[in-house]
Image (spheres, rainbow, N blue to C red):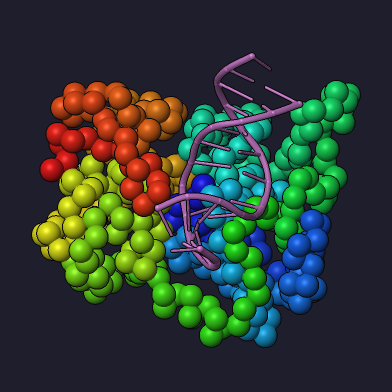
Length: 333
DNA sequence: ACGGCATGTCCAA
DNA sequence: TGGACCTGCCGTG
């Protein structure tokens, strides 16, 4: 369920732990057997994210393009050097976790990040996979062998001497050349982390301002602006106090510029913390509370029927773009 | 055990 | 515009 921030974090993990390393590439599940054979034994030379797309470059200008879709996830294990620019994170990135040890996304309680069971301590031995279903001896639960057996439907496994990354459930996973990468990027709207310039912002503003469709749809349109998903859409609209039904044309360009700047801010927070914190103007105490508790992190997302945090009006839920849209009919108009 | 649901996207009608 | 698809979690029984 990754929006742009997760994908940038994943790209940084690859930059930190895979770029410059030769990799053994396999497809334990088999559905990427051909691609794996093409990439096997090559060295990873670059890793980058644009919106929700990630690109890994290998020798000879070959690129692996991955889009996680709704369910995709990367699992990292082994020795993992944390990116110095982001909060420590190993384990699963993308999907939420089921083991209580994952640091990336919203369902992960923040205290796990420094908890005794966390997987992230840099370079230290860490607990490998735990099979919850098997009643094996406590010893068997601590499996220090490397690499660990693939668990579940692993589409791609990338293995260095010390680190392994498993990909499951992606909506896209393919080998393309540099021109193919460029073609994908050309179709995407600006990503403020890739290009935070005013020019990039103006590209979003002019594209959106030309459209007769609702701003609630435009923010989800990856050709207009990239990286925003259903959570950030709802929250950005609330933060701008903007009615989701207003068409692009009728939204003042100053408001569109503010949305661009706000997305720049929220994306940076998301990449740093690994969580979709959209209430950033909080006291230190409230902020800590919000980080620890998912339900305290958002203004409107998943709060239908609850009183608006600002005006007390009931938050509404409706379908827009075949997705659930949450908004406050009083604040946003 | 089972069904609904999810932070996404594409395609056929 | 509705369904298909990718996978796993969480509530309900």
